Length: 90
Image (tube, rainbow, N blue to C red):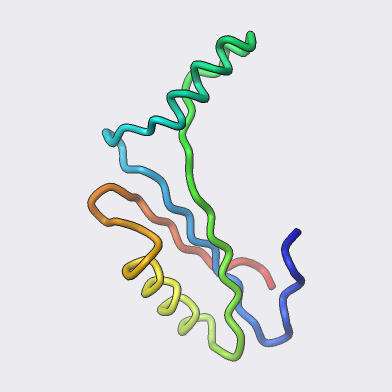
């Protein structure tokens, strides 16, 4: 369970997923397993990692810049990942 946001905090969601054409072995395995469980109507599965970053004492613009820095330096590889960053309600 996520902790409640502090006053004057900014929450940012970073979604990292594989670019089209990059093998997603986990999704392929899940897709096959769902078929074996009788859920054959599932046509396609993709996986993603969601990072919920809670910044304190910064503006929304600064939180976005910090989130972008985290993506560039740690959370994603631009060669294989597609990234979406968005501010979340406090």
